[in-house]
Length: 251
Image (cartoon, rainbow, N blue to C red):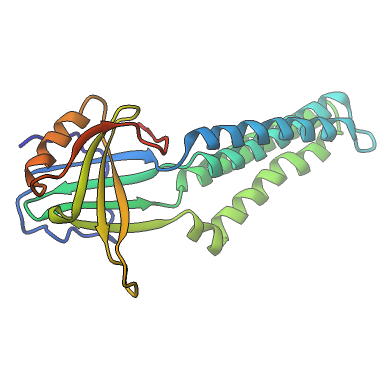
């Protein structure tokens, strides 16, 4: 019926269940599926603490270390750990949606950030060259070369070859919902999100649990998405506009 821009490719680990049915609507989007206000506060708090630690690093010089070397080492210390904090508190999840006559499918995935490894590798190389050059002027920069580029190199190695770290930053999920399970359709008034509530009995339970799925939309498209969904829902399902309780952010 209409297409939203597709800029992400579905990974081979995920396959559409209703791929044999014509697609009514489909799109991909990158979004933060968590409380971004809390994440911003955490990053601000940790950044302030990191500034204090960087200042402590600056105040405690090694023997023969000059003021300029201390400044550069403190700056490198701040940049390394600031990058690590940012990579933890502000991650994005990839989403792909596909609507058919049978229902809505949502594929969620987060690939390991290979770009971060390349970034660290380049930063380590550039700072190493800088410290070696500065060491020809002030030998104390040789110590900075060990702490700055050396620390970045160790960070790169821990990220590149740590299995647990890679698993923590890699996720694949496939959600499948038939239209009949939805009990409420809502257009978020505070975010570009369409919210669908549904009831289901979890495996091993003997009671019904209420859940919801947030459908991330691009700017000014949530109304169109909601209008497409509405005819497929069971008669009497409420269609409302309401504030989404979980703050979300999208590209």
